[in-house]
Image (cartoon, rainbow, N blue to C red; front, side):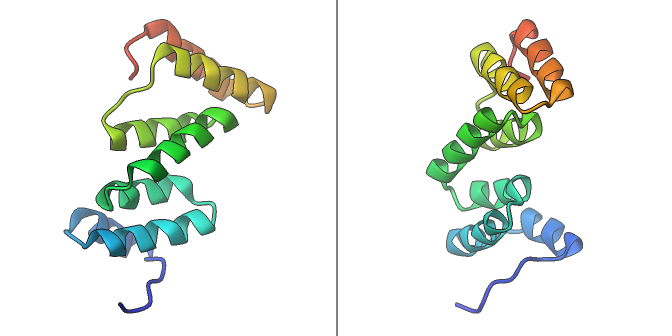
Length: 115
């Protein structure tokens, strides 16, 4: 397989929209993860059909209080966050000083629909 490099934003959009072998999608996702660009990795993990890596990112989002990462992973998994997950992410966000994330997570927990 040819060496894989991170795509520029336009290439990335095209790659997300096109078919690609799971191994290539996983290689691209791993490059994004190596650079701590988790949200950008999610689409490629979904294309690679990598449930373990998506689950690990979901756990990371919960531990770090990252509302945006949680939403992205949840969409890719087809499993919206539960109220308990929103509460957990709110606590994590508060512990890290991310008040606006905590506020959003608590709002979502109160809604109870996971969206």
